[in-house]
Length: 170
Image (cartoon, rainbow, N blue to C red; front, top):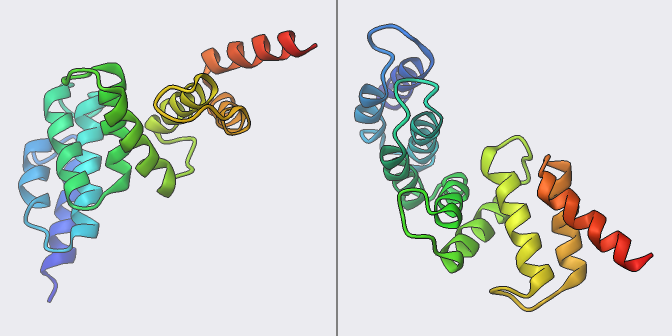
């Protein structure tokens, strides 16, 4: 039937408009009604992104975390990147490097999109973990690979790390 596409269209319209219907609460109410978890998880992540950034409505990091968890529970690996960021930086949760590593790994297994906000943080975190042997066995080659990805994604701290590594080998 046409129920699924209709609900998705309403949610998309709610997320993209600035009129009275364009609010995240309305979008969330419709998103949870979607039966297909593949569609639902992406919309839940998208709602979380808007709460995280404040692009639509007010910035609300607790609601963002709620929607990232919902998206992840429905199978959304994109939401895993945001959960990793929350646990790495201690955003609305206690910092937990092991959880950050777990979520970032899941995210990077599915996403290689440097334009997606968590990507830069995920590859920089993984670079540091492998270079320093934190949470994983030290592996300089893998660490450098992640470091290059972090630099390409615009992480200035990774660029400084690479310069220091290069200065030490010359």
